[in-house]
Length: 360
Image (cartoon, rainbow, N blue to C red):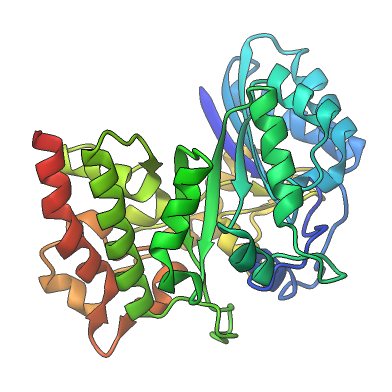
């Protein structure tokens, strides 16, 4: 390998918040061991060895930290990781992290700046909607703590984007959400649909097909009008589709139409092919016993990819299938209802307008 990408969960499913819709809490509760705690230094040493082994001490590794909440692992963990990678100067590391931002302080953010981290900040828009779903064990909302973390990132000039989980409730307020982004000058946005639980249960939070269609169409209209006035807000979904209109391949996993076996690393060294499927039956092995190349070629990895076709019957006659390719296997469980495809409704509305924007 000359390049290696991975997602690491240094604190397993541990988190300082208790978000109502947390998909990883749902995933971990369906495993024999829900949480493996914070990664030990011995496990970290093993991980670094496996990275160097796969790259043969030269190349690029893209390391993304998620959770749970990765900052629960503590600043010292990330400092040790960075220091250990310094021993291999021919390996270039691209660091990134998805975090709720509530535990960031000056020292932590200074470190993130010095190591050129890219951060994704989980923020569901304005306070009332954010705190309704994202709170701690005492039911105390995290909005102001997250905004304080964002202020520190701005102060230390750490690059960040905003990740918003679009719930059933939030889908009714696209303009309020867009205005919030504009007010705070947030330039890079990723909108993630809220999913039902693995067993199909929905606590009234997940998007219904009609929610998905109405929200993304309305949000696109707001974004388009802003772009036409000189706005520069980047929405990952719209930019991904714009790239595809220009003949480029999709860069978002959910638009490929088939899963690829990724490396999602739990704190005990267990490796899974996808963040949505960190389940016992999908475990590719443990880094103490197997390297990345062996796991990538394992029977479980091959089976996971082979059985990941996302298309359903209506896709066969859909004019837009080359853009969504049936969607994500995990996400599209709620997009088809009585032959209604929310993907199709959204693409039918926004693709012609995106094509027009690209020609201007």
